[in-house]
Image (cartoon, rainbow, N blue to C red; front, side):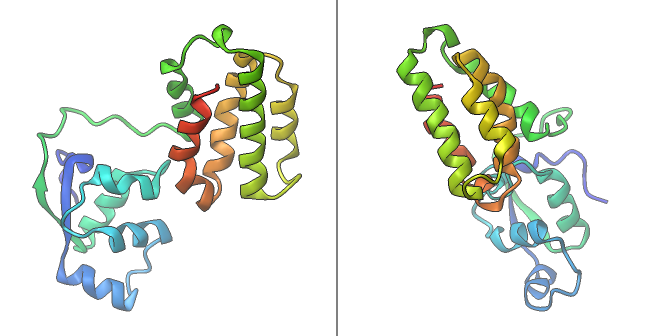
Length: 181
């Protein structure tokens, strides 16, 4: 069992000989995201650096699994582990926290509202294809205020998180959306 006191986000991991062998043989039958994490472990990047590649998923659980299988081992820690790590939030819940740093919704102009609405619609259409997420698109277009659009934002995040491409691009897309949302 993995050491519960390890702060996975601030620990740098290295592959073990077993980890190198697993990459070649796939004998453990690791889940695709866990295997991706194993492939990305290079002895130089911390868990925080790697979490973008598995955003929205249980990073600590994946590291614990790789440690339990003997595929990786801690190499260094950037800072001491916190007393009790918090459980990761689902994408929609975490999305609500994102909005706290934005300016008040009533300070956004009608033009910014249109830009935000269009941005959210275009990202859904480009990732999933036109007319594949009709209920989300209808919710976006029904919004008449920035506050209403912010209430749809968690659903937008959850939808994008359901796609590998959307999940990978979510931090970049969120940053662009927040300029006008």
